Length: 228
Length: 103
Image (cartoon, rainbow over the protein chains, first blue to last red):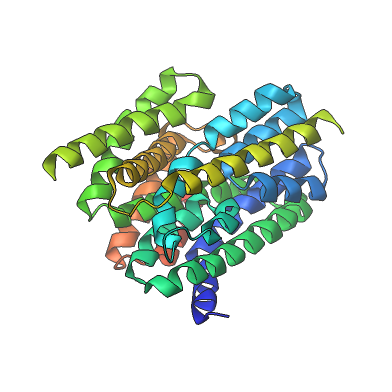
């Protein structure tokens, strides 16, 4: 196995593991509270593998929401996977027509994407896909283990602790964004996204995130394109 | 198959299709191609929207945390990140401790 696989796995077992673990722990606890099994919690975490979408499916499973409405709502809040996969793929290919990135497509999440976009450009081409595979394996196992642990420990977690765990997710992404604020391109996109965020409040919840991201991202891209 | 299970199965498949579509759409384009740059920009902006909404207008479990706790957690975490020379893990821990103490 390529040594970069282990470097990637080790990178996943640091800060990303804590942030992801905390969020999935809280998710497992929420599934228990909704009266659903640990198996269902694990299936949801691993099949959807994107927290906003998981929460939509959980909400509908516990409150009843209709199959079509649930799928549409969950897909809309997880729609960022598409532009993320587009942006990441050129860094995973070893040569033209390389189909191996398809095998790792399912593991693209905010956490794995953000880590890969930071680390891969500085890696030799041959090490990129192995590094990402190792990182994804580590992150996926942590997500699954934390979900089951959250389900088991639900009763033992005081409410303030659980809320703090839920906050780990946005705080971790905010820190990743802070790191990107020193680079002009990402800074433009992040600031434009933050400025477009209020749009999400006036649009239907399912589409707000997607629409504000599309508008903010496109504006930032156009400004950057004109300056380049 | 029960409705919740069917909804879970279809959502999982749809999310996989989204990810596969992204990989396929990228095709043979290089990282500096305008389409790739646009997709990166949209992905980053979406992430910023997600964080701003989570802090300023959250739903679900996060909404149980008062606004001042969310703002303090974010401010302390980001300040710690830069003061500690961009180390993620300690900054994350310090921010979460601040949330628990203030919330």
